[in-house]
Amino acid sequence: MVQRPLSPHLTIWRWGPHMLVSILHRITGNGMAVVGLGVLLWWLGALASGPAAYDSFSAAMTSPLGYVVLVGLTWAFFNHMASGIRHWFMDIGANYELRSNKNSARGVVVAGIVLTALFWGALLLL
Image 1 (cartoon, one colour):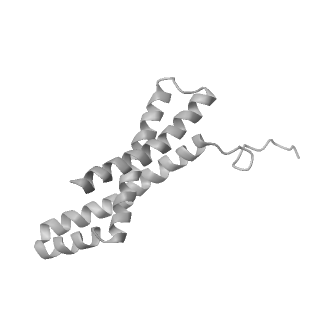
Image 2 (tube, helix red, strand yellow):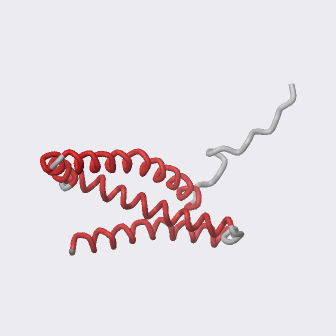
Image 3 (cartoon, helix red, strand yellow):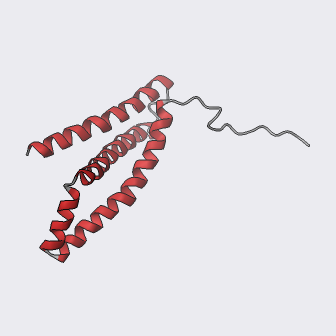
């Protein structure tokens, strides 16, 4: 029997920020699709059902758990957007050097956190 070479897998690759950002991009996209769609449909249903249903939705979203969900969706949006911009630059041929690739991945993580904090800071100050 001929021993065929094994494909590289997660135990062979050394983890780096670019791998984290790639995985987070998939997680945030799916999270926004599932959780975001659920919240959107609940909001639209409450809006169409009248004041009592909307008050119930509003009470749930302004509870501590509701704020966790909303802040999480906001972070997912900004992180996914920053990662998408990073990938767009890679699609046009930039950012393939290892150092700039890792730095842009770190920038995605920082941008997601900073933009979320700025958004909620502005929202809560209004």
